[in-house]
Image: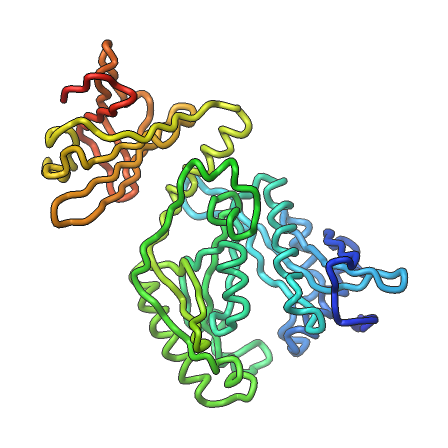
Length: 399
């Protein structure tokens, strides 16, 4: 049986070290990944993923990436990630990668190797026109939570208790069996910022910031309790499991993570809309490749209370008057997105995004107004007429 070879001259991987990230294709390279897997998770032979699982990933549209460091003219495996191909549910389908397993050698952790590995995985995914990577992780592992949520921009879409069952195939108990199911939309503005990538092509489109609705916390001592098998770790996990399960039932997603000064870890939950993110991604790609000038007008609406109504006919902006701001945020091919900000009396500030096709727009011949016959909002399907007038775009608007 292949045994992992500890060929480390130093456990420190400096910035000047020669690190290489490449696909693992040969049997020897895959065997080394299997051995490192066993070292990292300390699992029995019944519980580890064998070489054939790695091989199948490579042969069916997935990928196995390894991080190597040169030592004494030979390559040393520092970490790996195994990604399997997946198909999104629904009629539209769509391909994504599921990062089933990612491991870093214990001697070289906390040196940003995992983030470098994820960035390279992202590059390979985008080169194959894959825009989404999914994976899951144990939310009691706080170090991973920070990396996945804050460093890669991933969103915790769902939570499942006992994801792998209460016992492993070797019948060992799994005390922390709950898993957060993560999604990383690879070309979203949020992911660009978290990865420290160039945002010059995306800043103009604005930022989708979900409102934090609920927070779930873990004690600062959780890591210590787990390592010493303290009963308090189980108690803390059961509370976390209960709160995340309830949030998942309410369709809330984990959209943020932070640590308080006292060391308490906090998961931030809210509503995250995928359709809007996909629209923005499509617009960015269209602009980059087609070099189309996007409309970017931020003006104040001149229309009064008859200007905009919601589907029920109620005038949502009846008291807004001149405090209703209409942004023609961007135009992408035959699609236009509007951002409408309003300040109804006693209701604070409302911000809505709407998407409309150019075929659903009528413009007066004198250019004085714009009538939208049908709009789509990520809150609801609006199927009545809107009239939008903007100061800069349409002079002398009279609604």
